[in-house]
Length: 250
Image 1 (cartoon, helix red, strand yellow):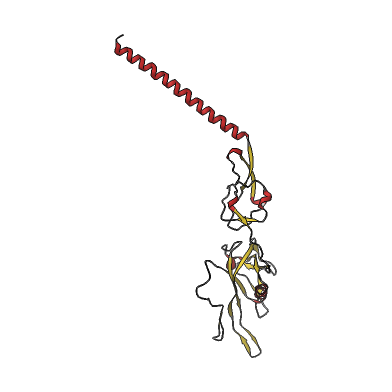
Image 2 (cartoon, rainbow, N blue to C red):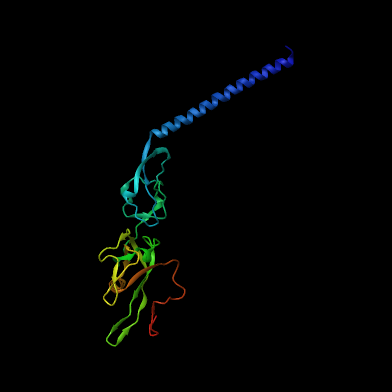
């Protein structure tokens, strides 16, 4: 065997030894990772997982979540682990189904301030809310009144903005209109049925004067509607009343 052949054989042996070394090293590394994973999986902790999509400001109840087990090594202190921690909380924004609840995903539910009253009325689900108004929304409330005749005195039909920038505390579930639900008296004493056939309770946080105006509108208006308000105060004060006669003020 000449020197060139001997060098070739030596290089082949070195290559084989290197390959064996790399193989053993990779096997050892994979084994270590697997051992770490097995050790981590061996220690589990309980976290809360959302069962269905949640909208912004929707209350997060025990029925909306379920307990799930995750490796303790991967769970941080931000995860919510106790159902009792959901008390009085609402979703800070939309939360998709399957998401693990964490601290920044929940905020305190809107609460009454000193002097406020909590009052709920039934609103036509289609024309009054249409799925846009949620817990915590700021809305204007409008009411429409039919024209009436009282002897020689005539009252014009009017659309009136009765409440300006009030807070919605809670929006209930849609339910079929039945009996007195979803029906409002107009100022002729007759009742006007809602057009959608379904209603839902909407709860507001109001002061005493606003509570009185809302109660009057619910009792005597033909229709009560909500208008979702966004942004800062209006640059130009909007009309508060629109009637059939020119005598109607603003």
